[in-house]
Image (tube, rainbow, N blue to C red):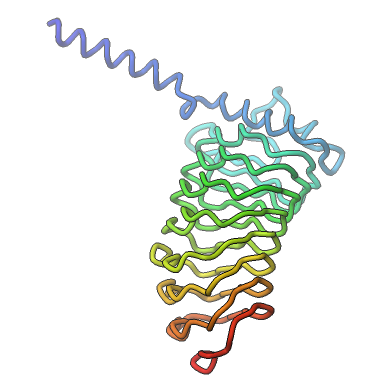
Length: 262
């Protein structure tokens, strides 16, 4: 065997070792991540079920709320909806690199939303509404390029909506109602959101003008912006949204200059 062939084979062997050790291909990373999530949870219902069910004595793919891929033992969905969970969201959740669906809605999670969730590049649904989360929406959410649904309603979030979220071209539902979000909406917010069907931003502290670019979100069915501090006229371009079914703008500081065209 020639010297070059030997070097090439050694290179391939080294690559195999690196891939085998890669967290993205190592199912033990998922187990460790789930156990870290469990360690940040104080209580669960009924009978502290995660404490008894999420046990290293069994395959994590059989744990309650956990769904794995059919092809490999990797977590693809984590559904902890309405389980009376209390605690914080562990940053290790960002190591579940095959995750496409995350739902922790209707619990009592508190503290900040981990930046590490932005590492979940396969994520299509992120549902963390109706908890007690504080702080700002992580800038890293803009990295979730396959996200179709982003719902963080009913928390205590502050600060502006990250500009990068309006660049997620796959986004269909953006639901951020019942928070204390502030700042303005970018006038070009719909230039990259051609698939957006629901814009739910009511009950916040958003201000400024309603973007004229809303007409570029041609699939919009619901626009809910009530109970904010928006000013100025209703953009006449909204009249071009042929699929619009609900337009909720009450309790703002807007004028009705173009209301007759809707």
